[in-house]
Image 1 (cartoon, rainbow, N blue to C red):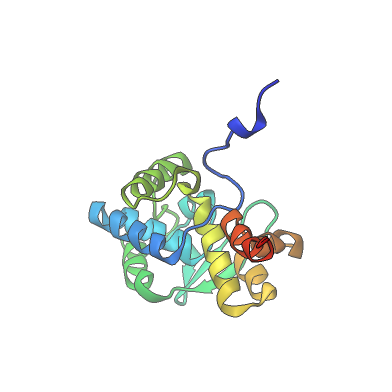
Image 2 (cartoon, rainbow, N blue to C red; image 1 turned 90 degrees about the vertical axis):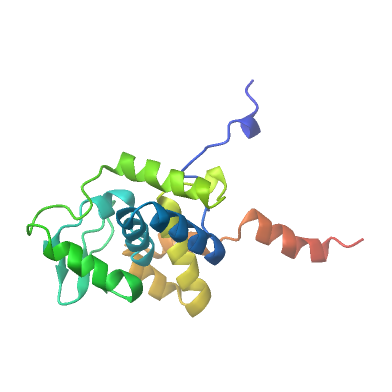
Length: 185
């Protein structure tokens, strides 16, 4: 019988997210390579997007300084303002393209490879080196800063709170640190 513990799922693992320090290192690594990679990862993070949602964005999705996101997997559509460092480069990129031309003309598989490459440079563990870690990171960050599940639910476009509750689950490291206090014999 196969030992289930040795069949570790690499990429897409549940609960993987990036710390603020890892995000900074990842964005620095991506920007050192190319502005496109940096902007793609920044938009992925800022809007809690799935890989397929990012690569399908067109200039038509950017109106009045906001990004209109057609969420996938039964999630609700969201409208989010363009904020911070993404705003000007994203508006400039949108102006350079046709209305229905993709802003990031790459496949989601190519995005996976881009994220993995920059995660490796940023010393981010392999189990968190995938685009969906950006969504997990954004949602956990919003939850930690606001303490409000309804905000996370709306921002991420979740159709039910059961999806949002995932972000309240502690990581193994968090659970171990808390449990250590109770295991003092």
